[in-house]
Each structure stands twice: as structure tokens, then as C-alpha cells.
Length: 190
Image (cartoon, rainbow, N blue to C red; front, side, top):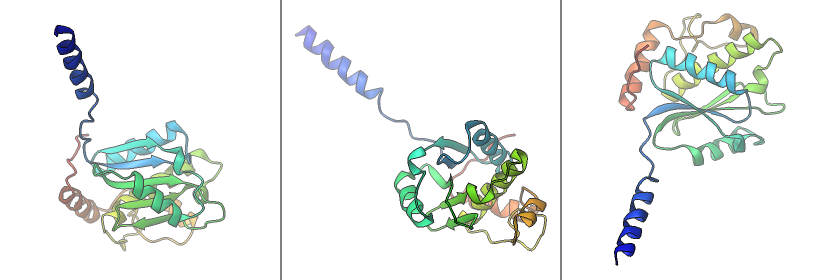
């Protein structure tokens, strides 16, 4: 009888330890084999520093190889959790000229890293950082700003993208903070 009691208690304790603790709400960057691990961490740290909210980065190579934005959006919806206030996927598409597509109703943004690629690693990283900032803003319903130095400003070429800032103008930073708070994101300290 003692053995059965100990066995039962052991099973309960084992399975109780396996339950997942709820994750903190965050903006989640998903790398679909588009960048290497050091660049992913650089982008995550940059975004968290600029957005002042938690930004989590995860690898999900299963999302790589989707034929287009629509197929990737469907796959991203399946992996998005309640803790992912916004899910930003870094992927690559052959022959697709668009750099970013945002599905704000789903809280999903898709970045085409392949269309942003250049052999200059620093320029490439900065292009991805800009797109992550744009994705965060647009997935929260913010619109492009007329300020040519704000990262949300509309652009027509990679040269124009490279010339713009990598952060929000002060009014857009305030608007983003309001939207982040509405979505339950807790500000992070620098």
C-alpha cells in the first residue's frame, strides 16, 4: 500500500512539474531560416531597446520554404500563441519583391529578408531592423508618418530605406507605447 501511495505521489509531482507556466506577453520574432543566430539576437535586442517592450526571438525553420506570403501567414497563424502580441516572421521568398506584409487583424507581420539582402552585413542587418520596427508599428495599427526620418515613413527603393532612421519619431513612439499598453505589454527598463 505504501508503494502505491509513493508511486502515485511521484507521478503527480512529475506531471505537475511538466505543466507550462504562462509566457509573458511579448512581440515575438520568428526566424524561418532567414538570418543566423547572432543576427537574430542583435535584431531582437535592438527592437526591445527601441520599442521598450519585451521582444522574444525563436527559431522555427519549419516556416521556411513557404511559396508566398499567404501560405506563410496561414502557417504563422497556427504557431502564434496568446503570449505573442505580435508575431513577426523573418523569411525569404524567391522572386518576391515586397519587403514586408502586415496582417494587423491577426497581429502577424512577414518580412522578406531575401528581398533586403546585400553582401554588406551591416547594411543587411539595419534593413532587417528597420523592417522589424515597421512591422511592430503597422501590426499595432499605426500608419506611415510624413516625417522622413521616422522608420514608418513610406519609401520607394532600398536606397530610401537605407537613408531613413531606424526608430520612431517622438509622436509615433508615444502612439506605439499607448497601443502596446492596450495589448498588455509591460514596459521594460533599459
